[in-house]
Image (cartoon, rainbow, N blue to C red):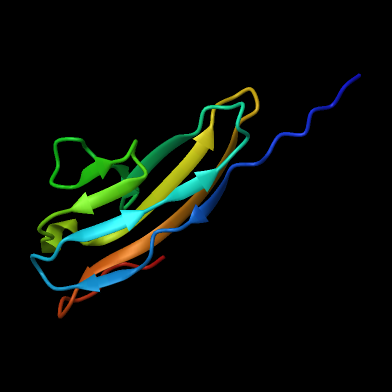
Length: 110
């Protein structure tokens, strides 16, 4: 029998918490490493729900970056980056960041 060690999926650049003023551009990054023989996929969620492509939140660079060009109070929240390789050798890692509007009541807890 031959055992091949695969590299676990790991986030190496995590999104950072941000407190910004309303109308500011916000960019969150997420970069990961994984077994190079496997496909690496990214999913972003806001407050636990997948981000819709028609929203003001833009997914860029093959979904590794979120760009919010003109943030509003509705777009503040907990943003989570999920990176994974699919089965049969699937592995996953997650990282979250809180984006809040300066002067607003913070309703988020991570």
